[in-house]
Image (cartoon, rainbow, N blue to C red; front, side):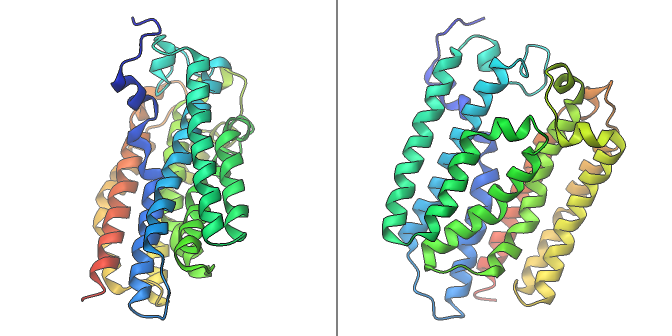
Length: 303
């Protein structure tokens, strides 16, 4: 066991890079959708600012990951026997305060980048950025009060998409909110799978999650419902003319979704190992779904 001797790779792993698709994918889909719209409508697009906005979304997620890990460890949520806990703190690779200030450094950098983007765009971005700032910094408080799913849905759905779109175009568009929802539902399921698995551990830590309040049976239903809504919304957006027909190719990921639902159906509070890796599998579905959606939107410019 290491004792406060982090390597370079430990510093990278502490940011949880495998989780970056949660923030980068809605930002990427929005970026590609702006490209698609720019070929159909008279839009003045700031491409470089868009790239910075995508980077900013990931930076805020990193800060949220680190600060959340700090609070989960110091409040006894993450222990040696918990799944998916911050092993770098449990194994004493990092001091808790090191992880905390590591997170603060990222949120500070993200805030400075956000203020620069506000100076180049407008005040509506400040409101969006402040919500993201406080969401990243105080996620633990929402999570422990069964509001984590709601916060993740708002931030990793409409908030990121509206922010990227506004930075790139200087406008707000309801179509971007609609476009963000299918990805947001799958992203929420990453957290929901994690919380369903950890119901027993979270009870011991005296925190509340939506999965705990719902119970296993309703949690399984919620997981399946959110996935169904993700695919139905894509179809609805195509019919409404908001998305091109080629994006129906996201239905090719249905076997992955069905497989995840079968795993979720095995959830038992007393047997968390039954869905041990479902959060990872759900993240893989979100990544595959989002990349395919982006690719088909991009390809539709020439189809």
